[in-house]
Amino acid sequence: MITLTILLTVLGFYMLLLTSKRAAIPTSVPERKLALSNKQVFKVTALILLIAAFVALSLVWGIASGIISEFIILSIVASLVVILVPLQVINYKQMSVIFIVSFIFEIYLAYAS
Image (cartoon, rainbow, N blue to C red; front, side, top):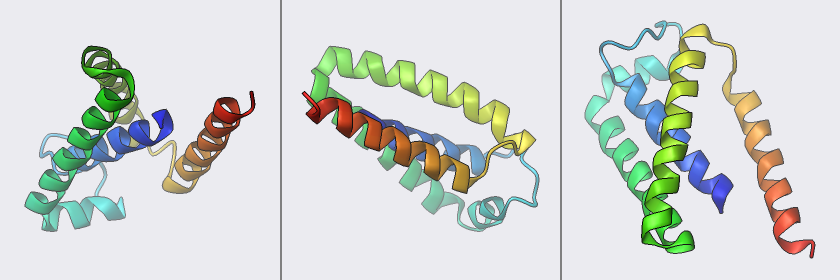
């Protein structure tokens, strides 16, 4: 569940970053062109993803700890995305592998005992 909320947070913040005018994202990134042509859709979808992550963590861990945890996750994700996206260090294939391995590891730890 934690991996899925982190994934929702990453996608939501990344979509908001793509629609930003001041972001230093190269135009060679294919998602950037799509985001610039559909700004409103990207912003609404990103906000829905971020709200879904807040609600999911609030349901799992309780209201106060869920909100605090999501703010911590959001600050970590935001700093990583702002640093790594303009440098094009990591692509979507690598991120997919990271999230799949993380999800499998989370399932294993939750149900192994």
